[in-house]
Image (cartoon, rainbow, N blue to C red; front, side, top):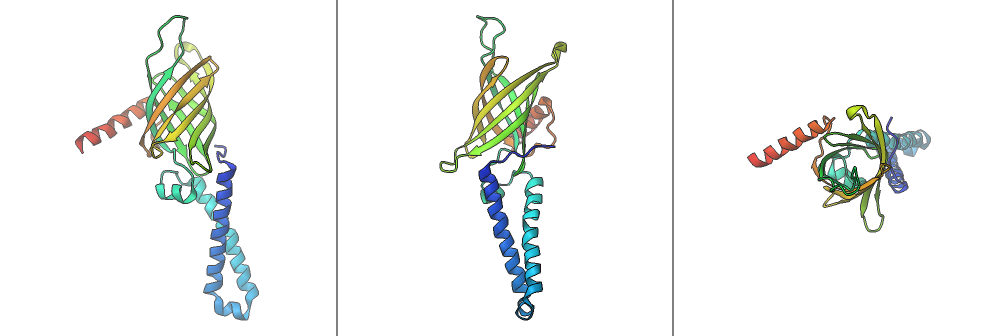
Length: 226
């Protein structure tokens, strides 16, 4: 089960939408049965109340299931979009021995699956997968600046290490919600910088670094041939 990943602002917005939709449904019921309402208002009001109470349930079912990749929904509900396959580079300050040169930039893919209520992040490099434990997409109510903050775990199984690394990332969402840039910290200890660009909102079949690479190459091939 994926835990909820929404802020109090997101929850308040959802409650307001539910109230508005409930009021609209109730008004439609009364208007459709206006003649009956004038004669016997109580049964009509009961039906209107039932319809109004059903509206929030319907909204919850929709926003819990639908993938958050539609611009119209994002603008309507004010929930920023990070759903999709992201590709970029990781710059790490990790060195095995003091005095060693810094590592070269590491290609990395993020697969972010998002609904209005939930958020999950999986990261892939050629050697280490990572998975988020806690996630939050926060948008400043005044400026609109948004950042993706998450705690994650990476498991290194190469060479029978079976080593788990915990970390925290803070990435700023920009460039019309198509770029994520920021820093991360781990208990290795190491820190670094990540820059990601959105490749596609369709990421259902991406389960590994190889899958992400194939998708990237296919998208680039389409752009060249277009």
